[in-house]
Length: 600
Image 1 (cartoon, helix red, strand yellow):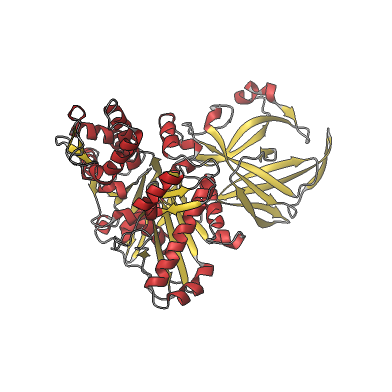
Image 2: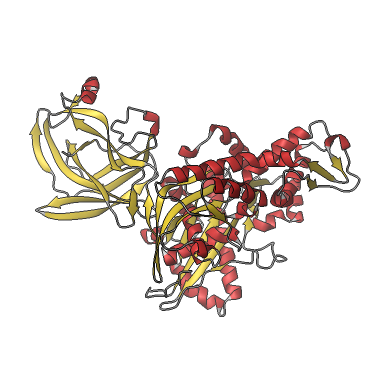
C-alpha cells in the first residue's frame, strides 16, 4: 500500500465529499492540517439511524407535500410514522431522482420508460430543487456529526466551514452539463456562495476515479495495485455501473495512474433489478388477492432489502416474507406469509444487468492493446453473491483476475472522492469522444468534398467563397490527456463590427468515424457540448475593406484543458510578438456561436 504524504497546504482545510447515489447516499470528509498525514473519515450517524451505529449510508428518498414543502428525507423517510403520515396526507415520494440527471447521450429507448416510472417528481419540483434539498440535508448532517464527534466541534466548524472544499461525485457518463446542474444545486443548497470563489470550492470527480482512489488506500485492494499492473475498477451501484481501467506506476512512495481505455457508464445497477422484480410480481400475481400495486410494492421493498442481497444459487428457491402465517394462496406460490420464487426466475431478474456488465468489461478489454491483469469489484451492488459469482466466471474467460476488497465497499465513492482530492493518483485520462468546433473553410475547387457542397457556399465579408458545415477537431476520441496538457486550434474571425465579446460552440462527436470532417455527415452524432465565451476587447483586430464593405478580421486560439475532471477553457492570441491569454467562461447550454473559419 502506498503511504499517504503529509498535507502540503499552508492553511487548515476541511474537505467534504458528497456521494448522492440512485438508491443510497453517503458523505466523506477530512480535516487537512499542514505537515500532518490526512485521515479520511465518513459521516457515520444520520437522523433515523440511531439504532444502526456506524451506518455510512442513507436512502436517497424525500417526501414533499402537495405545496412542495419538504416533509421527510433520508432514513427518517422510511420510519413507520412517516410512511403512515405520507399516506394520510398524500405526500409525494421521490426516489431514484439521480437518474433524471442522465445526459441525452445516454438515453435508452428500452430504459427511458423504466426511468420515467422509477424517478417521478412532483409537478412543482425540478431535479435542481430536489438535488439542492438533498445536498442541504447532507451538509447539515455533516455539520452535526462534526460538532458531536470532534473535541471543540463548534469552534472547529466555525473556523473551517467558510472555506470548505466540496467534492461532488457523479457517474463516469455524466458530462459538463450535469456538473453545471450539480454546482447550481450545491450553490442553492448553501454549500458555497454564488461567486467565482464559490464555484472554485465545488469540484467534481467521477465515481470510477473515486473508487480507484478508495482501492489504492484500502489495505486489501491495494495488494492488487502494484507497479506496472493494469487494473479495472468496476463500481457497481444502484443506478449505474462505472468501469475504469488504469495502468499503474509506483516509484517508492509515489504512485501515478493513467487511464488506458475510455471509461464506461451503463445503466445496469441494482435498481434495474428492483424494477424488473416489480414487473415480474405484478404479472405473476395477476388474479391473486395479493396482486395489487400496494401489496406488490411492499413485496418489492422486502425483496430489495433481503432476497436480492442473499441470492446466490439459481438451483435454490428464494422467498419474500411479506405477511403473516395466515397469508396463503397456493396457486400463486404464497404460503405462510411468504411467496416463493424459483432460482431460475430470480436469476432471470439479474441477467440483463449481469449481461450488460459483462459486455462493458469485454469492451474495456478490447479497447486497449495492453492486457488487463486485475479487476476490483466495488460499490453497493458488489455485495451481491450472485453478481460476483457470475462476473468472476466471466472474468476468468477474458483473462481477468477479479476480486472484491474485504471492506465496506459501499462507501468507496464517498471516501474515495476525498482521497482523490488529497492524493491525486490519476495523472492522465482518456477522451471518451471527439471534441471540436463547427466552422467554415475557404472553398477549394480541387477538393471533392467542397465540390459536393458548392450549392451551400457563400461569399464572406472578406470576399472569399466559404464552405459551411466543416468540423475542426480539437481533441480526438481515445487520446490520453494529462492534467496540464492543452489542446487548441486557431480560428479566423470575420465581423462587420469590432467585437468585444465572442461565443463559440464546442461540439462533441459521438460517432464511429476516426476523422470526422463535416457535421452534415451523420448529423445526429454531433451535438453542442458547451459554449466558450470571452471578452476580446484586448485582441488586436485588423480593419479591412472587402467587396461587401468594411470589416474586421482577427485570429485567436481556443485552448481547452480536458485533463481535469472538469472542462476549462482559455483564449490565446499574439500581440506585437507576445503571447497573451484570457480566461473563457464555459456555459453548458446550447447557444449559437460566432461564425468561424479554420485558420490556414
